[in-house]
Length: 235
Image (tube, rainbow, N blue to C red; front, side, top):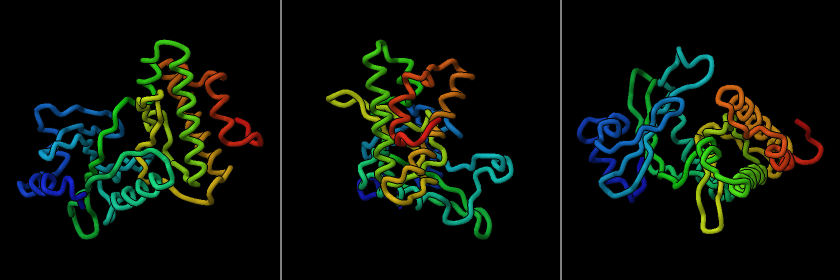
């Protein structure tokens, strides 16, 4: 599957017997992006700057299941979720293409191509902030993202700091959400959904404090985020 703007470029890569991810890894100016697995930021022949990610499982069973999924994988779901989130006003990258490769029987592997966003992930943006005003702008952007997810009734099972992306705008910064393939939808404006998102983000912030000393979990930082789940919720 490919958006018409990149269809020719994607088809040309696959026609040479490449997978999208292996092709991206060999590009001379590819930039490695570390997450669950290495993704690659490259420029297609169409001129589009994209991120090419190889789908892989996480969690306790990752060592067993690796990168093999039951067809059709999560890729079609990621496209559908991305479109629904964007329609609801939640910033998230455009899914431009995906490719599914047969392994055996119903088992397949997949690559997903998304449009590159300007900016940097939340931990990098937080470290780069040089004063209290910049940090306050990041916190407010993250709080707004949580509000938008609540408005959409969206629950992100892996909402961690690396999956929040801070983008510059003409008026300051805006936060987008990444890796949305497992996002679930329920009732709009659900306080329960908002609380589940908040708890996951706070847990991630505390892990980053313990592991890297990142101070995004300070009480004055978390206060505006806590308010997005409503006054009836407490951390």
